Image (cartoon, rainbow, N blue to C red; front, side, top):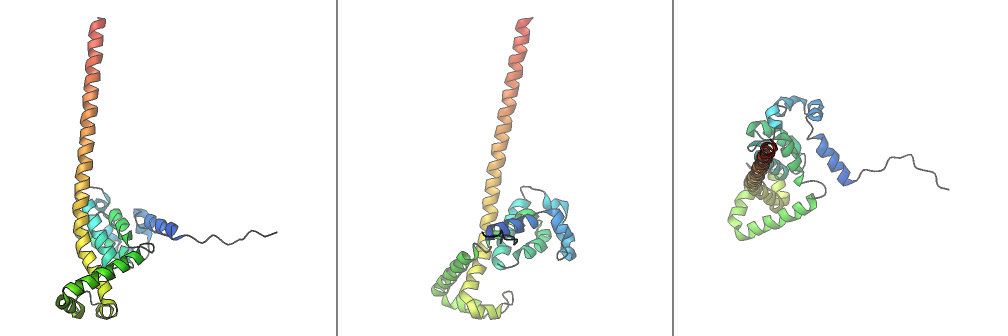
Length: 204
């Protein structure tokens, strides 16, 4: 008869990502983090935790930028830059997980294919990019995997503005629907009040 194991079950990748997401989108957890304490004043401002039509799209754009420009440890870049661009911190933190252990293989493949495509279409431009040491000082990384890094740089340049404008569009649609529902509820309430008033008048 087998004895039950005393060891804890190994967490799955999804549960690890969920725990990571909860940890870095909770204001109290971030405030208590020893690693983040030196920069805590930059992202604990209450206005960066409110959900507004301005800071939510900025949070999406910042999260996409941080997620693609640094696929490892991207949360720290998002937190540091959130104060500078006045972005929503929990949204920025969550969106950085566009690159996570589950999706990273796909993005590595996609970045490599896009990078190779650009280098094939514009070889002169690609040579300049690959030899430019000023691009985040990743000269050695460019030499080792130039096409993949170039693809990630293109993603970091293209996806944030796309995410920003899509989020603004979705926000506008959501707010429009909320206003319409509010107007409908107001009309129904006024009609009900008018009917009640008419019933009272008839009863007199």
